[in-house]
Length: 338
View 1 (cartoon, rainbow, N blue to C red):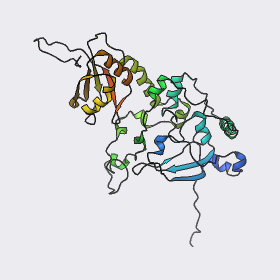
View 2 (cartoon, helix red, strand yellow):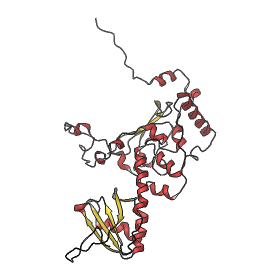
View 3 (spheres, rainbow, N blue to C red):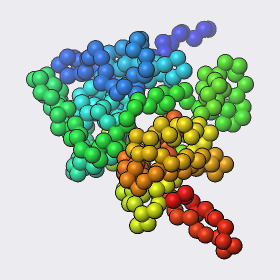
View 4 (tube, one colour):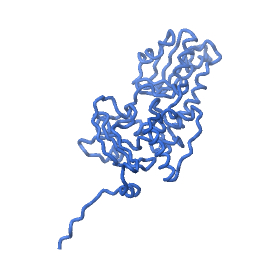
């Protein structure tokens, strides 16, 4: 005898299954017409098509069912979707997708550390999280600006850490896992590098940067990206200290490749003073920019050290070293043209 057909249903989280018995409006479930997202996640195309589904998932922080938005920020980009509800994102002024600050594009931990804010106590119980979310929803309904307390005050350190231009690279297609095992034989594979995009900086990044806990990122706790940014900012002050030798007017640029030309260096540094010479040494992934006077070199070092990005490539900027004479009397190089 044939077995009767059984209807398969999509499994739902335990919390959401219990919530389905209640009235969404009375329970305060989120329903909105547009997400709270940053410019990076929206993508460069001003005309995008979004898929909207009410109560399609639980918020990763509050576990409250919310309206999920899904879209593709570019032809070669992967699909993005919101992972936290609107109230939770507005409470910390972060994007509903990447959880970065909406104004400056930096992690919450880095923003709060620069501003000297005390670390927020994490509400662990479901009751406390639900109460906190309800309070935020009430303030939004009353017309209060819940982002006012979360917005970062304007200061020089925040400006230096802030992203100056949109970074659409994070929207690229994921790396093909079959390619990593040398087993991808799909002729139309949409993932990198099978789709022709061979730029894969994730493969050379630190392992801890590839796996991040979403709650840690939201609450600003143990965020490896924020810790790396703060460490780089602290090292920046050391790199900016001009050497005592006033004859040194050369700046060393490290981490270069063929994407950075002498013309790119000239366009970046000429605004700080008259340039005497520019030299690119691609074989050693470095370059040198020499100013005619010390004042121009100091202005460039103070403005660009720790924040030098050319052609989407972050470079290291340091003061050059004085030339050391050779024992045979000939000229020598000690890392700079000073």
